[in-house]
Image (cartoon, rainbow, N blue to C red; front, side, top):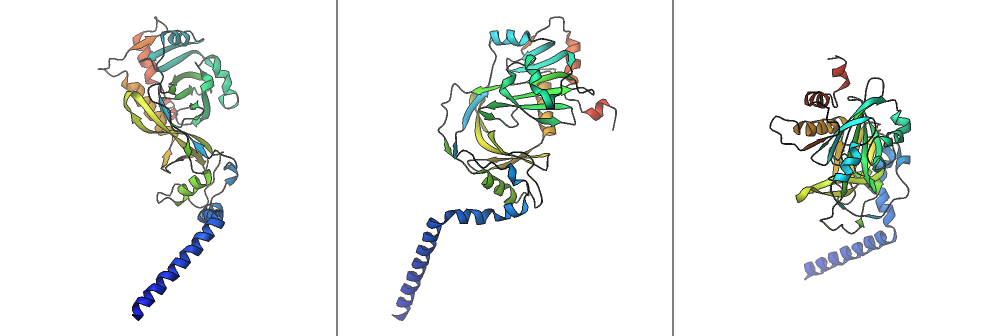
Length: 309
């Protein structure tokens, strides 16, 4: 009998404690969130780059690579100061006949005369190993490291633009677009990077550029459709790129050199010995051997061209 009363007393005590804790959480939930993030605020620098205002919701996008119409291919073929290849109706590879003396860091818009739909791209940065400037396409927000929505502009040793590779995405016409859903805050995303067992960010690291909400490919679907998830993009210590899925919290890291290598591999596959690539050439006098030599020179590392081992 006594043991039954003791059990009842314990149950009542725990019930009262649960009620007190629940009341505290309801009355002061922000303090709990701040407690979880205190290590980030004390150990990671550059928090001024975390936006103070950000959307509470964002939608996933369904996108697919854009395949050019005949009229669009005529526009691309008629761009000035270049001869280009249009491969499988979706990939542009262009050689500039006269290298462009453009300071891309300061005046990237000067490229707009030579690049089809240049206004759809945002400057991201430069891959020093291959002297290549990287522009990510924007579908309302930047699409990070996506081979189907990128502009890569290569420059020579004098900093002059010599050729570029371009692909472009569009919203899918075959799949209905999704509704907006609640997303994590940028500080929660940073907390995920700092707390991860993979040590993406360590004590003393610094966020060196403004954190932006963009998109990253989640999973491929049939008919070349991609699911683009809302994603927070972080640049850390000036040269490390981390991405946090703003809905599910998945963490990834990318680097420019690997991305350039992926693009080069993709281009080379179209020119393999057994390839049946459909190609449109803007200049009929552009000989096959010259085209192949041009393709081989795409994204060659600067140390290779300079003979440095």
